[in-house]
Amino acid sequence: MTDWISPDGDDPEFIFHRTERFAHAMYGLIIITAVLVAEAEHVTDAVDALLIVLGTGLVLLLAHTYVAVVAERTLLKHRLESNKRIEVLIDNVPVLIAVLAPSLLIAAEAGAIEIETAFTWAIAFTVVALYAIGVLEGRRIGYSWARSLLVGLGGAFIGAVIIMVESLL
Image 1: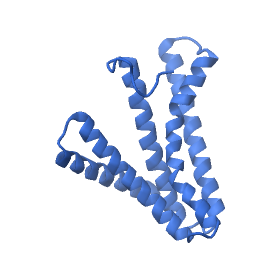
Image 2: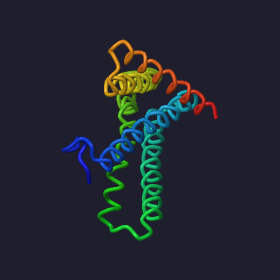
Image 3: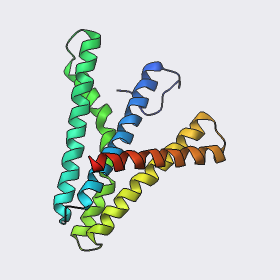
Image 4: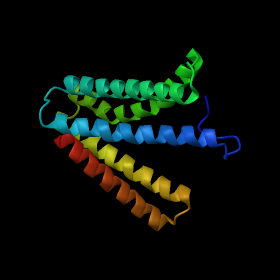
């Protein structure tokens, strides 16, 4: 398994895995948030909402892992060793980052905040995370701070639109 930081920074396999993990984290954020938006109108129990989000996160992890294993087996034209399958599973764990925001539902269950507030904060967390990812993307590419902030706004806007469309379906 590759680490987050490449020793030489130019290893194509490392860059591919890092890109894949980053994409999975963003995908998870968007899908889980769409689930939250849809739940906010119908679910009134924080535990039910949290279980739905955790279940969705687990399904995303398993689906990403299954698809990655099948793709690698097909491309390599042979069965993957069990350690390689475990590596693929670990590479897909970042999709679970999306479950962090809905953990606010625990605070709602404890009575610390209203469930509506937990939903709102969790959704806001995702939009802020997408903004931060966009700013990071701009800075990594070498854009100025001003341009990177615009890239962040664009990323947050596109993510919010995708979340709204997904939650309406």
